[in-house]
Image (tube, rainbow, N blue to C red; front, side, top):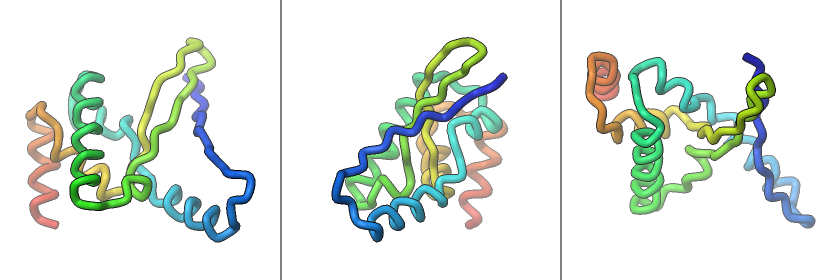
Length: 118
């Protein structure tokens, strides 16, 4: 299956080079996506959406810049002609997402145990 990532950009006409560099640094740390979640657990899209919302709320309440850990992207499957939402995440963002999951199974329990030993 061939997929293409569509990343929305909101560049301002007068954005400075240092802001662009900072954004690129954040983007480089976003090495996980929701695809990685499917590897550790059988989840519904609704469960993932709820967990993402909780993660964003945790970051907001903890005064953490969500942009450093989460980025919404759109993925287009050219073969099927489908467009769906995905999220890029940092390692911390991905770990937070695992902790926010309601579904508990063997794979999720194993991941939570690894997180407890960090």
